[in-house]
Amino acid sequence: MTTPDAAVAPGIEEQPERRLHPMSWLFVLIQQLKQFILPILALFLFGRGDRNDLWGLVAICVLGAVSIWQYYTYRFRIGIDSLEIRSGLLERSLRQIPFARIHNVGLHQTLLHRIFGVAEVRLESAGGIKPEAEMRVLKLEDALALEALVRRRSRADAATAAPVDDPAAGGIGLLHTLSTAEVVRVGLISNRGLIVVGGAYVAMNQFGSDMTSDLIESWGRVLFGMVDSYGRGHEAMATLFLVLVFLLLLRAFSVLLALLQYSGFRLEEHGRRLTLERGLLTRIRTSTPRRRIQSWTLREGMLHRLFKRRTLEVGTAVLDNGSHSQPRSLREVAPVATPQRCDELIRHLAPQVQWPPQTWQRLHRWTFARLFVPQMLLASLLGAIALWNSGLLGLVFVVLWVPWIAYITWQHASHAGYAIDERMVATRRGWWTREWRFAEIGKLQAIRFGQSPLERLLGMATLLLDTAGGNALAEPLRLRFLPEADARALQARLAREIARSPLRW
Image 1: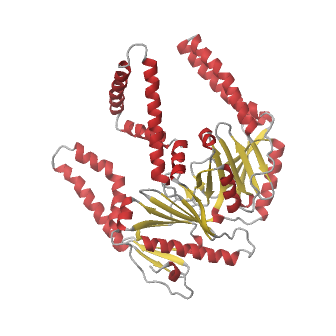
Image 2 (image 1 turned 30 degrees about the vertical axis):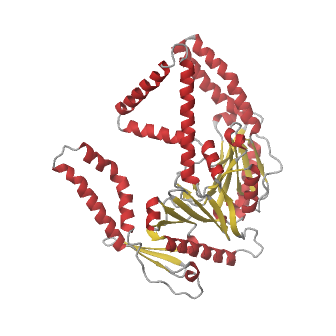
Image 3 (image 1 turned 120 degrees about the vertical axis):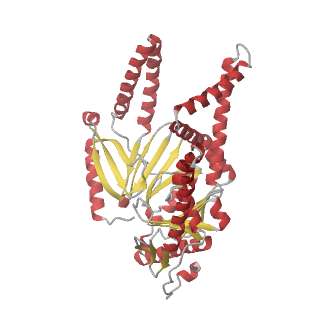
């Protein structure tokens, strides 16, 4: 592959077909072994010691042959305006990917990739469930050259299509970075340690309940032995101490995961594209045009407020797989930043919208009742179960829980609201954990009007605003609990706006 400057030089001819890196078969083999590693290990570890154990070696040899086969049958060529990929021997395929249709370029480097000086390249288009192309693997300089080529091609296409005074023209420079102290704050704020421990517990249960019960029993003996060593009368203090130690270890584990994931975090602007790079051992680099951003999300929990920070995320036109560790598209613009910095990033990247809104509109006056009734039904069910199992004492605990439910519901209802102007529609919700979301009206694809039976009774409705791509596991943008007349009027207004304006994604 040529250098980025030569790759986009005027008048350059198409390049001849090329193969991937000579060691690409090794990375394809490792990727395939990840899918079959558990059956192969089970065959080696729990086999009977006869010739049947050799089938594991046979499987590895077959996978190795397939990997080498794929290396020799995979070709790519960089054309004037597209990337051409040819693969397969018995079943041949030819794919042409125009540079103008590539919405996201992702570079993935594990520790092994960095040792060999290579990278895995993923090219994705809007709304695709799978990448348009996965190139395992290219030399790092070739991968960066391909990324620069796509970036310059898209910049040239956008320059010819957009007006000269377009405010989204963008510049070149560093937008946001995380110091080591900020990465530590990410770990302290997040609950990734608890999520990983919970996932490990679920995975252990897949191997049988005996393994989990034996582990809990052995750890229980150790813990209760420590409690008994404190002597009589100190059991409660010892138990509280062990719980605190466990929570501290979880936070320390979360900090470690954050250091592995967010070290070297850099958000850069290259004209009309945003490039994000992060990771300590595994480096992830993704590049997305700014115009592909469909929605914005600001999050603030109790620990965020303790550190005076917020999290800024975006949803892009590329359909994400929901994985925080290896996202396919640009997601976290600022894992942590001050509220002022988050607002500055929004105003810089979306200058056409006014953020924060000047005024927020309240929801339906019966929003408290809409939120409180389902909680009361759940409390009544728990009260009946507690009365059946524990008598009046259990019922008393549930009754004392009701005022707390009412207080939380009142706080959620009072903090919720929405805002709309000529360019954007926004919503806010939450009290303990707060969330602000907004999207440009020109990025909306569809609007759905919905009412539950309770909402029809209370005279309210919910509007679901759909945008392209985004995280498959994330909740879509909703305007909840609006007065029914306001919801219908707003639906008609947004439908007119969408019908008369072209989709900008």
